Length: 155
Image (cartoon, rainbow, N blue to C red):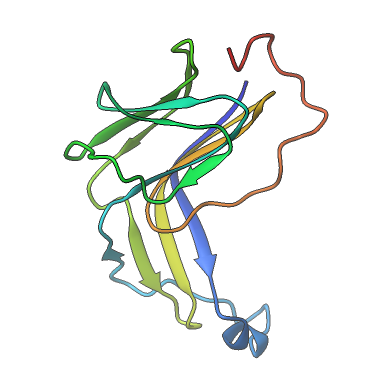
């Protein structure tokens, strides 16, 4: 299993019109005073298996193969959250911890917006699984097509 867990993920979003007039040297600096956002938990199950989402030791919901729920609609306990995703056999596929204030939004000097949140990813032989807390789904390169996976990584 190729597991990527990130304590904090930063995604910088900018409007093309704003960036169109900026040179790379001008760059942007983060404005002080990030604003905390309401916490939400989301999942993208890009695998071929049903995944169980567990928060603080309690099953929150079962996520069918090939689905995304952003944000999840099920009731979630109070923060902090210890989040796990599990295979049908109960094997832990990914984990992350979410604390109050982890999801923020900051306006940059160049007019762009920086979003921060928590994120866990598992690249498996049966597909990619992403779980995130915050308002923007993290992106990244596709899974390595030449990667080797342990036998039964999706079992």
